[in-house]
Length: 530
Image 1 (tube, rainbow, N blue to C red):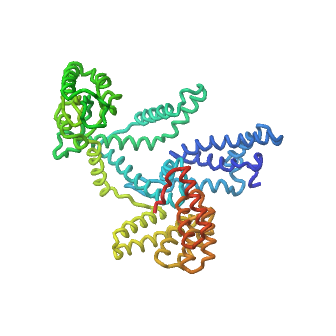
Image 2: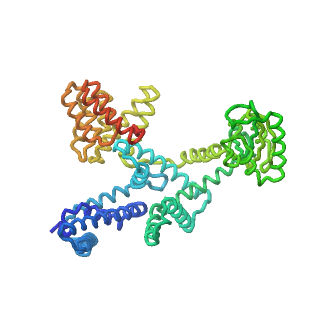
Image 3: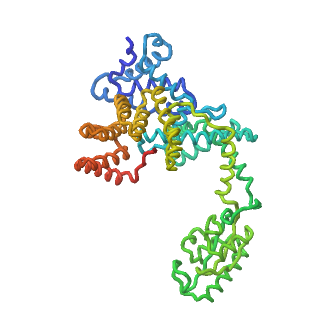
């Protein structure tokens, strides 16, 4: 009777997943609920489609299949009759998944960063393309480091007296929801669909994430506001001007402008006339630019040049623009392009210079609020990153302690997470690089027994077998790597090299064709993050 609860929907491909999602929804929080609510809708539609398949085939076609199935699923899991009926593998799996999702992988002060936070951000980064487990291993570390900085800034904002109220968060969620609705064209849908989709959109913006982002934004604005045009030591490229201009060229001025037949004297006369008109009616400057300017790039925008610094303009133009007060019209300014009438809209410190203040503050706070990595797989990735950084300096003596630390970290990660094949792959790679082939073989063979299979393990096994002079075993491992690789372009590239080195021309040709076809259909492919 252990599995009585799934019998109303025989062989359903989605019912077990719905159980897991409902469990997580009722037991989870924050982003986990958001993700599950979205996924439940997808899985529910899959269950409806499955019901329709039976209806069309004449088997169990009534709606009660779904209704009873879902009722029993929920009662079986939430204590209304099924909670004490022995072991429920799906329930145990769901609880384990939720526990891992909520696991603290690092701490910044007293604030925990969970595996779920990292996973959700990696998922967002991978939208539209597939990432291999090996890529996710290192990208997850990058995401963790990003979350460290976000957490430090958000917590520092509180110590700076910055406030973010519940109403601020709700208003921001509403704003983002409206922007997303407009971007997706929801307003053009029938009212029933429009209201439903708009209500669902808000789940894309979890309150905790929005609150943290508001703290960071307000702190950033405060820090950037500390840098003004009066700040001492600003470099020329750190000050920017927003301006419009009207260019009047003459025949023989630097090419690249629209063809003109006027002489230089005629150009100067016209420029002076336009200057007088622009100074008399600054509000009409854009219209004058659209009518008279010979700069075809800015003419359609009313002469708008956007923000620029001194270094991006020719000297006479830059001198005039940066010496003028905001709101004034100056000229004519002669350059190799012609005569310019310039309207200065505003001046500011560059965004890059302002951002330096945020970076400087963050670096100071990092010394006070260091992140402590807790999860063994993240510790291992961090140790490997430090080893690679030290290794790049070509100081082998200094890199050796880092290498040993990374080896130890992956060994620990395997003990703590024995079902994660990535840790076996990384440890095998490190043993291989150290020419410890038997150790590499032992580790990789253990990893190869795990499910789902990992292409990188078979690839590394092939490399080890070649070093151990066992080409047949190497070839078999490479073929398995190709079978498991899917769309992992990095594995396919390495297989191409291996096959070429083994003089397996047909296999190498097949890999080359795969890479060419993939690049044509998808564009540049993401390299692996090692």
